[in-house]
Image 1: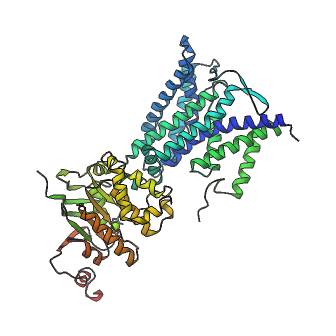
Image 2: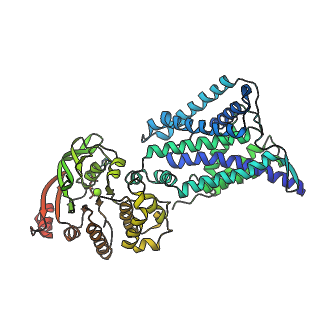
Image 3: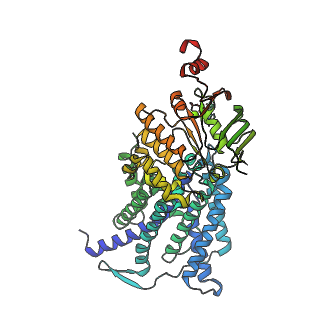
Length: 294
Length: 242
Ligand SMILES: Nc1ncnc2c1ncn2[C@@H]1O[C@H](COP(=O)(O)OP(=O)(O)OP(=O)(O)O)[C@@H](O)[C@H]1O
Ligand SMILES: [Mg+2]
């Protein structure tokens, strides 16, 4: 039997992981459903967002308020997302092998940006200041305020994303282009503009996740590599498509991973997680929340 | 000067990849006119609408809408001008709800201010859509989807509508309902270009009709000219089918 404290600790670390994964995977899933590609540069977007915020807030005496750093980083990531879509995705849109070509081009972007970060920011280890300092008590255990902040902010960010897609004209336009680009064209929706917004949104989500994680972990150019792999798995596991499915899968995987870390240990947890996922996919090949196609 | 023609297509050649489907098509639709386009399967009716609405670019020829040259313009630019193409067998947006789809369709700048007025019009024209407001497009019946498809066209605040086989696969009763609705739409001063396989449907609605054959317009029939069903079938399929 697990003690109540141990259970609370597990729940909290599972929720932190789930929050990070949900924000990463929802950006990836949005790009997948709208453009039909997998963006392998999504992980390095996360690292870059954290590095840009670090530079604005900490480096070279620029000891500015962290909120300003976040705003700068968000603006930078939006611009970068648009730039990447223009340069390595749009030229291939409509080609038969687009999915495979863009695997290559976005992998190239990933490598280029990782090396670029290494070159620009050097090997010295960096850490972001937490957005909120101190400790809080939650469910009978004490955790860092930053972790509590992540648990609270993630659902708010995801709810905002959902509301944007559900209620605004641009958000609906993005979904329309993803579901039927030909019909979208005929009601005057400019697919290119929707793609640019989608990529910008997804890059901002990744960058913001990097900022949140950058005070819990040390910044490295590869900060986003492991979350990216998890995010891929989550999108597949969540049924490849619905945002709700992706978010649900992210929290489930976060909690299962936290459970595995406390039971089989840090070393074997990733392998054990894969075994569980494969077992689930054997029973439900359409993913956890995907709909079976008749 | 206001043009007396809504649409004027002249000498359009267009097609897909490297081959032409349309071999120089010319036609006119007057403001306040309802024009039918009739022809066998695969002879280029849909291709013609695509070439007009910017889905494909004409290789040769002109397309004028309300006096402006629009040949080669993007579909978005054509929608912005108010020429709306309601495509054949439109699946719309499978995971979107009916009401959401209608609201979305008022996407262009011109349509936004008229959104709630047009929504009222559409729901009055097709009360069934109101009953189905929260249903996803992919679960709609064929008839309901066709109504939604036309409704979506109306939400774009059209100055002219091009309907591609609105009665495809519908029962006679639904066809009649749709004919009434389309008639009401054109009564509000919206010129129509109507592609149809059902000759009596075209004859009941259109003031004038073009016959399309192998990518060319081979005949023009006005309402006054008493051309009946059988004569047209003969023209297309030869004596034995008539
Ligand atoms: N996207 C496309 N790519 C290549 N060829 C096409 C495409 N769309 C149509 N075609 C071809 O162009 C020709 C004309 O097709 P079109 O759809 O214009 O016919 P239609 O008159 O609308 O027929 P229907 O009454 O069956 O709808 C056909 O031979 C068709 O195969
Ligand atoms: Mg057709």
